[in-house]
Length: 590
Image 1: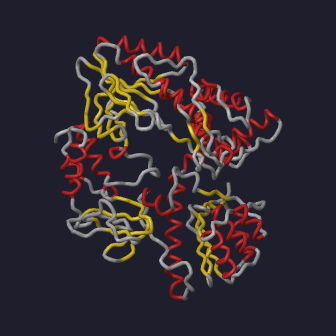
Image 2: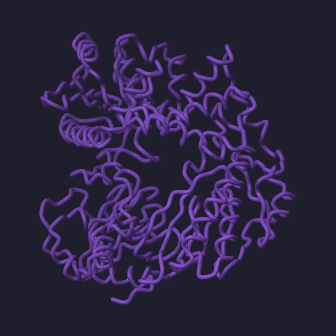
Image 3: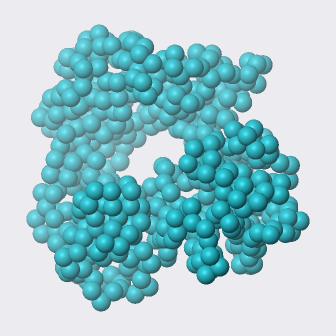
């Protein structure tokens, strides 16, 4: 592999900077007008370039510069991308450049990173040292004195890009292996994009012809019915007739709207209330905790392969792909199971990406897999089969259903009832063809169905929402010392105050938030991504656009440069009270 350079660019009407840094040797290459085009070509030819949004911005500008464009011409092209949202494929036509020329080795991290976010937001989530907005308006005519400031700003972005590259090490290595296996360049693609590209290629192999994406507008306004599999049966719950009679409609954005007959409808059984939705079935418990004891077990049953098996069990496929899709998808699901048994970790991981992400693309109107009725068939069937096992559980003496969330059900049952519960699960598996995986808990502590801490019998912790860490790039840090203090209290009996006062890690005290249009602090612009900690002051952040207070910023102080040491004005008492409040939200008294 070529040596890796992180790459970023700054484009102004009278000045352009292409900035490269070797992530191992720290060697830097900087090119400004008048540019050494031969030197620039050598750098590109001899290295792998790693960018954030390079496909959409930096590479088009770079390729145009290699044609000899002036700074003003590059700025005009930059405006076409940023202001007018010019896409790469149209940039090629308009400016007569190739964006993927032979010899270019480029990896764009933007789609590899989970969810969606700016480089600044990912930097804040990774606790990168600097979070800085562009220090000058983009239409500025740059003075010689401002060039150093802009160069330092670009250098900070390179640091953040490198942080992101290292954070994404494992998914990038997996994409490298998958690219070789499927003979596709998957290195810059999201999980869902990989699933689409691989399945499309494999289906086309079987069909012998290209698979063409359906026109998304042809689905808008369509009405269709849910078609229940014969093995879906409910006795105590009377929701099925209404589900079968309801009209599901595709709205203007290509999404399925939940029918009015089902929207907001509560399903009550066994003392617990549930609600169906396009996304999944959810119970509605709030502020409660449930623990196992000498006579009772807490058991969680998750449906294995909830979405992939929902596709397979019903024989679903996008019409434009035909039944060949089922042959490809079934092989991949089965091969993933086989790879796990044979400890082929790379194959198992790549097949997991494809089989799990495939379902999401069925609901994306830009995808070749798009077909809205398939989404309804998978999600509604999944909800109904969970209701099937729920109504069986509540009929067993000594069993209480505690919670249900998308693909799993948690029950508390008397030890004498465990054989009946396990028998019910086995019977459900034989009827539906799905398989459930069991996990035993010591206790479940919930603010609501999406915010909870579950302590396993082996001492491990499963947490979600405000109590969960989440994956590093998927969730904004919000005073994580508080959630850690709550979990340590529940699992170890540790003092809330003791945990907060013992921490010397500034990363545990910061909060991060995106603010549309940007935020102000004491009248000074801070940025669209803001990072702060709490002090005893009465200051707050305000929204630049309307002057409203940014939520939960009373007493907040910016730390766009992450302090290396705990600041003297950090208000630890705020964090103690916040953690105690989070416990109270679960119904737990300190």
